[in-house]
Length: 156
Image (cartoon, rainbow, N blue to C red; front, top):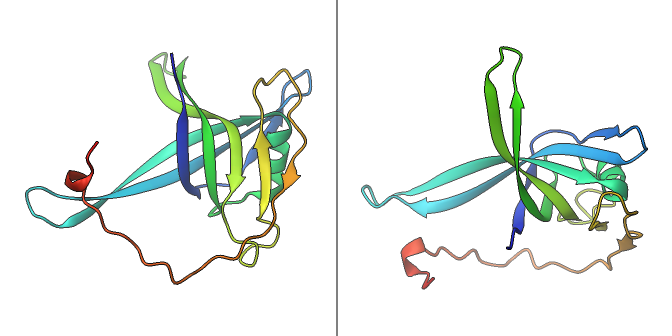
């Protein structure tokens, strides 16, 4: 089986950091992603926004808490999980969320201080996360044109 999710989006709220009784860090935050598509009936471009809850464990959680804040752009690689619980009224509830294995900060260093930092990732919450590494700053060309491709034009 294969369960992998890759998302790029902006944080919808500040990182919420907690620790388990054995000392493992757990960070939670919301991520907003969007896609643009052409409405088949009207022919106009529309936008669909998705809000996804993200959970990060270990050292990556502590780094995310230190460097991320609402509005920051990140790339998340992880796995999809299905959460179930019973609410206060006794009703069964459920939702899908993502457990991040890698968090990469996407903001340019010039726009938000130390955002070139890569939080790395983890493979198992019970094992320590690898030491984070600094990424070399890269020059970005802000004059890159956007490409408007309809879903009908994509061959897969």
